[in-house]
Image (cartoon, rainbow, N blue to C red):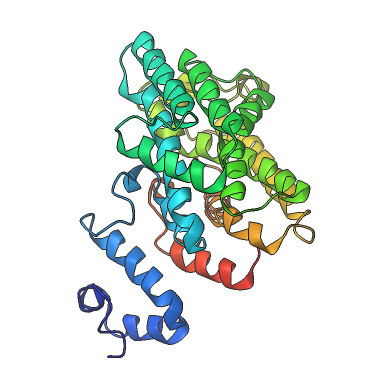
Length: 324
């Protein structure tokens, strides 16, 4: 085979159904073929190699895959930023006491300050983040804003309303996108507006996707105003209720994420082509919103807990079309 020189080619082919690999080779240009081999190899084996050892792929698989489609000069920095974001995001779930969580957040604030003094700690994520900051002159304000917002989220309370969830999403997910744009060398107001809306959609979808996980641990973070509007209690979610009032809550929240995606796309004609790779993860958001709609907004439906294996193909198609 003309691709037999590519690492993992033979192993991946044996994992696929007969004829499937040939179709893959036919429809995907050689320059992108290695991207798919890497993604498929990872999907079937957690032991495959990674471009950056400190990146926790299992915690942000979608972000990891979408980062592979970035230009080479920005790819490593994107993975560093996402690794930083994951480190912060998992603090809340990994500590038993709020005080310990706040201490970890203070550690990351200090790390950011040290990075901008060219004195990064001897820690893998810190070292990669320092490299990204030096290479792309990333704005410190966005990094600190992510840490500060995650720190406030240690309160472990449900969002009072949808606006509060959107503000949290803006300060975390949108800030991450602003940094990704900087790593791509993009400074454009239309791209920033699109990033703001995509980040809000990302935060809302993440909140929905995490609902079954947190409900099983007797925690509910969905906006209280929408729950009250439809007469859905926290106990309904903890029990995994699939009643209409619970579905109505999910519908309202999912609809707001869809609105943000539509707003983001309204800027598409004015967004520079160089910014598009930062927005490819809209594929993942759109996929979840479509799937939750197909199950009539039953957030606890088993199909929603499974990763869509076609996401890498959808990402490639979106990158080929140069749209988001």
